[in-house]
Every structure is written in C-alpha cells, then in structure tokens.
Length: 101
Image 1 (tube, rainbow, N blue to C red):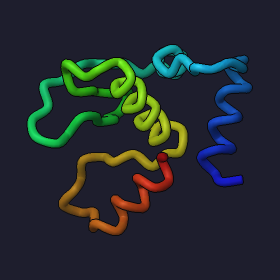
Image 2: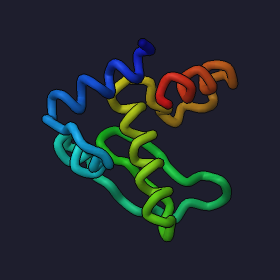
Image 3: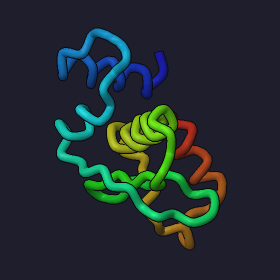
Image 4: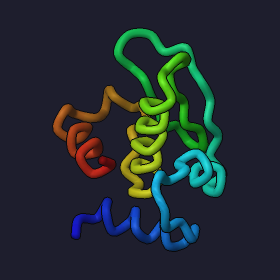
C-alpha cells in the first residue's frame, strides 16, 4: 500500500469517517486549517501555506473539493510546497506533487 493511501485511511479512521463522499472541509477544520478564496492569476488554482489553504475564487464546488483534498495531501504527508521555488529544482517539486496525490 502506498504511503498516501495508508495515511488517508488513518485520517478517516481517526475522524470516524466511513462513508463517501468525504467532507474534506470538515477534515480541514478538525486539523485547524483555514480555507480562503484567493484571487489567483494565471494557472494557479490552489496553495497550501502554513495553516491556510487558498483556492481560486469562483471555482465549481467539485473542483474546489478536489483542490482542498490535494492540499490536505500535502498537509498530512508533510510534503508541502513552501514557496521557496528559487531553492527547489523541478524534480523536487514533481516528487512532492506525486507524493501528495
């Protein structure tokens, strides 16, 4: 079993969630994370920074849910992009994204 799937099962068990669809915003609140809509420009739709998940304003609810879940993947796996892009190379960023999915 891969690390992300194992960690997801642990989170669901800890929070006594056994039915779909999973309320990702509830998990985010339990974890003490804030959700905000940000006015991103260009291709950026989501960011996980510290204790905040930012999603692009005006997204359909299904896409917003998917992006929150993605940010939670970074949160629970400790592989967040920390906005120090000048010190990260492309391969490191790609590895972080694969692990969080």
